[in-house]
Image (cartoon, rainbow, N blue to C red; front, side, top):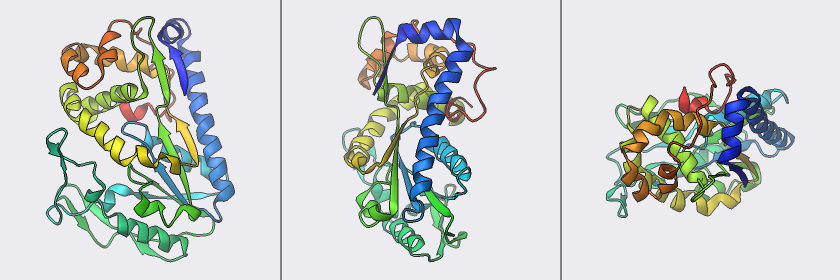
Length: 307
């Protein structure tokens, strides 16, 4: 796990922004390139790539970046969205989250994992499958999606929080590469508690929710304990299934996220403490803004959260 001091991050943001951003991006893309190389080397007998990671770990973007990197090795990546394996609302009972008094929308019971496992086994066997499609407006699974069969120079990438679930991985470990994505870094202020990886992910999610999901920081905070519970129950127990890991944290992102979120975070100091995020409140006013608009590359994972 990497560790950065806030003093170092602020110094680079103030005096060396362009080089700081470039170095962070290079480190991330280097990890992606190494992952793609290993997937390509094993693609003949491991055509399934399962990408897992907790909320706001950059799964969607990194999934795409791995696919692009595979093209350089002559491997085409087909994509399966785990979202299309949600079950039709009303055909099952959504389990409760008794700790937080809300429905457990993170539960694997909300997904048709046996069907996904069957489809992946068929792809490994060289058979053609018909992908389902989930209509989020009607909250229903729609049959008759596109057909898919893997050619010899193809792999299939699936990303989602349940991709390492034993229902899927149990029979496919011999034919699958597991890639675990996370923020695996911490930030140490000059005084007080460090910002742990899940706190840095919260900042990403709060930014994304406010920009793209019409959800202010207060609403993200209200959901955070349930999200973390889902991670403890459904992701952490299976992390050992990963063959490869990527730390998606870009140290300069803290300077961007905090400068945009700080006014809202100040309004919710009590909620931050209640969500085990008190160190975030403690560094308000201590993170230097960064001049970044001209320096962030178009393929940065950070665009998943800041646009």
